[in-house]
Image (spheres, rainbow, N blue to C red):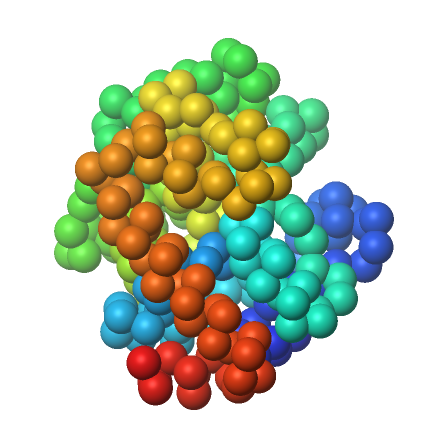
Length: 252
C-alpha cells in the first residue's frame, strides 16, 4: 500500500488482494504507523476546524472510512482504493492481536465504556494483553498519558476520541509514542464495549452508516449528520470542477 495525493488529499491505495498482508507488514516497521480516514463529513470538518487538514498529514495511511468517500474517489477515477474502513481495520487488528499475542491500549470513551471494552477484548475476543484509559482529559494531562502508554509499549493503540481531539493528540505525540500501529477508531470503543452496535453490511453499502449511528446517538452525533450534508456538497463540487480540495473549500 502507498499514499498518493488525490485532489490535494492524501489517500491510500492498496495492491490488489493484499490488504491484510499490507496491514501485517506494519508491525515490522521501525517507526510508528498511524491510520486515519475520511468520511464525507470529514471534508467539511477540515474546512471549519483550524489546522485539522495539516494535523492529519502526520498520519501515514488514509482509508475511505465512509462508503460515500469511497464512491467519491471512484468518481474521481482513483484506482486501488479499498472499502476497508477504520471499524473494519479495528476488528482486523483485534483478531490479529488475539491470534498473535499482540497487545492493545484503548484510549477514549467514558470510564465505564473503556473499562467494559477492555473486559470484552480479553474475555470475548481473546486478546491477552489489554490496557486503557478514558478519553476525558485536559491537554496538561497528555504527557502523563503518553508516559502510561509508553510504559505498556503496546503493539496497537486505538484512539476513540472525537475530532479534533484525537488528531491533536497524534499531531503532538506521534513521534514520542512507543507503539507499532495507531488507529483513529472513533466510536468503535463503544461498539466493542456493547454500548452501541456496528452497522450491518447492507447499511454500509447503501451509504447509511452515518444515519445508523445517528439513530443510536442522535444528540452526540447531530453535528456529524449535518456535516455529512455539507461535505457531500463539497465533494460534488470537487468532482464537477476537478479542482483540488483546498481551492474548492476556500471558495465556499
